[in-house]
Amino acid sequence: MSSPPPIPISSQQSSHNHKSSITIPIPSFRPILTRLSGLSRHALSNSRPWTELIDRTALSRPGSFSEAASRVRKNVAYFRVNYLIVLAVVLAYSLISHPFSLLTLVTLSGAWIFLYVLRPSDQPLVIFGRTFSDTQALFGLGLATLFAILVTSVLSLILTAVMVGVMIVCAHGAFRDPEDLFLDDQQPLASGFTSIFGGGDPAFGSASASVMSRV
Image (cartoon, rainbow, N blue to C red; front, side):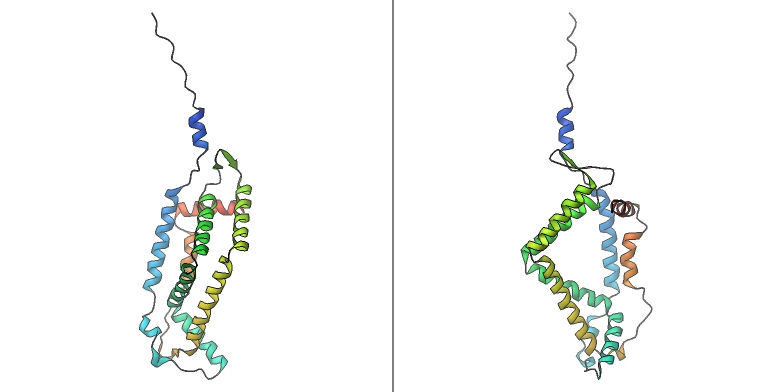
């Protein structure tokens, strides 16, 4: 007696489960974190001694507005990394003091990064079995961001923190006499930040090209 023929098993369920998930290219995110970490270490290594920044003997009142502006220019060129750290601390303190705004900002940033920036352009966004195009994903993220800005105070909080940080930097730069400082020919930090978006890393380059192709 011959054995019964094998019963074909449909793969619709597994296919449905596959379509219900959101595939996010986590490995491509690691090189970006590595480059950001390396840039942060490089920037911190270029910071000036904090004893120079808070040297009370070097504080003096500027004689005129033009002198104050000149001091700010020189001090920003010399203490640029320290000033960026001050701005970051002020911004972090403002966000930590408002947990709901911090949670909103983290959620929005994560949504943009994982659902749009790091998602390959040839891979559709599938949520709960429904496929969304790039235009629909961009429109949905834009609406969510606009709603968060209008309903919460995250934008005003960030702007206020940045303004307070800039005021602190300008006040210190105006009263800090830069005569004892020696400027050198360091590479501007802007080139370091732009190098993240430009180059060397194929994974990061492909992610950047993918984002630009959708705009």
